[in-house]
Length: 411
Image (spheres, rainbow, N blue to C red):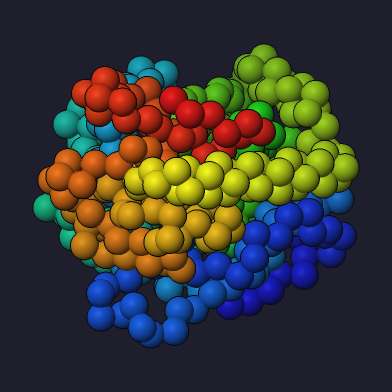
């Protein structure tokens, strides 16, 4: 682990801590049964605010090989994800790619290749860049060539030499994972065709203020992104945000379209989101300290509710075993004394144990024969799909607990 004493975007040392979620294991470091008695590695999980450029960020940076070389999140593994990525690809093809099928499309953090496959099926040249060797093998089987590297300027030059410039570069749920944003920007500038577009998607900081989604803070997420700080960052590299939108992914996500400076008109959407951020006073440190107070209050309410239910001999389990759920469980002190198990549909997590809490991750077959009275909805970003899927459970009296927000809701 290393500790940054300077902002990763502007190099300012003027950072102030606003939220401390304690010592936590990496959120995706699920354990096998024979590892349960081994000591777990934990690291400080603390959020800071840059008084200079206003980027919210972690300063404790866990070794990226520990976090990403054997990753267990799959893009295709969640409900309604494939239609989402298909729509994403169609938007880029319709608005930013020409009919020239020799155009190169590159994805940074390409995971299992689900998104790039849509571009391949449309006839474009594709290339994935992802350091997770295990998942890259899955992408290759899908017909998606993948460089198993961490993206940087040197890798960008290697791609240009071998494949040429990219008309479209995508980075979904990856920019927040990268420690050195300046090296990232140099790589984008090197790889991007003069008329090309870089499209990035990341959890939107505004969502944390609106919905109190503090569980999206974990060691993989080194930055919590908003338009204003990113404008300042990209400007240093003669890159420009030309369009912006909020999309319903992982709660609210920010999708940005970035080109070389002065190559495209700038949509009114960009300033509209900047105004929204200023409305939440995301440029003022007091807002972040107020957020921290709300997080502490939410933790207390959730813990008290669960304890009260246990006193009534209610059975409670977790629905989903997402990385963000482990932030919440460890911060709130929710363990096997409260939750019997975590139901998870991803085979890669089944049979493992949640880091820190050691809650067993089980299959749907197991859960259906050990039904709880309440599910703690850790995968809350899929709430509508889950409630629809679990209609029978609810009709029989089963309930869901929404674990985030100023007021903990029972659904």
